[in-house]
Length: 234
Image 1 (cartoon, rainbow, N blue to C red):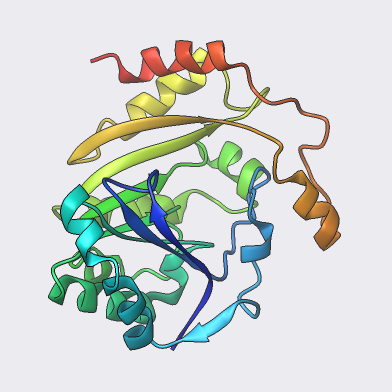
Image 2 (tube, rainbow, N blue to C red):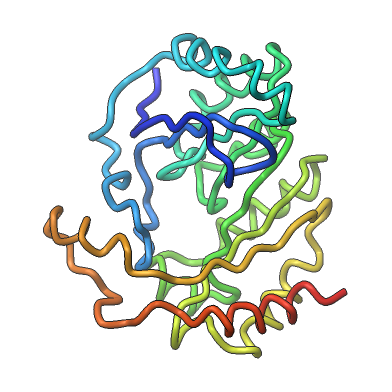
């Protein structure tokens, strides 16, 4: 059994084609900009078996085929429920469904087995050095480094995502360091800089969780375009 937060059908931004996106419940990082704090607590959400979950996923196989889509297992942090995650990935592969995981690379360490059944990894890199990583997540960067080592031993395609936060990750020097850091990742297909936005702040108020970035304005679109040109320049 696993514990999930929700399921989104007909997703269009979490991997190629039309996708079913499964949001796993539970995340240790609690990033300062997270817009889904309701996924943090592993005791919330609801239980489901891998069989029942995959039965929901395969209902949409005709849409996957037409659009080269599939399933994306997200979160929260899907790596924290590694046994359940592996079961779901295996079953989806047997059904011929393209599999993706959307992750921060912060799990329990059995990454080689997980990646064996994963076609695409969408890796959210929070920061480029240990101090910055701790500022955003309260955890060190070591686990991400371990995940990248496993990633480089496997044949998964990789998309990198990075949130650009005003005053923290929004300068050229930082983006150049990020570019250098990801230059050794194999099978890298895509790099996306995501603009910080405060749309999820209301959830913190509802959950009575302090919002650490309160008062920081949404980032300027022109700056994102400028930084995107830097990181995607060959």
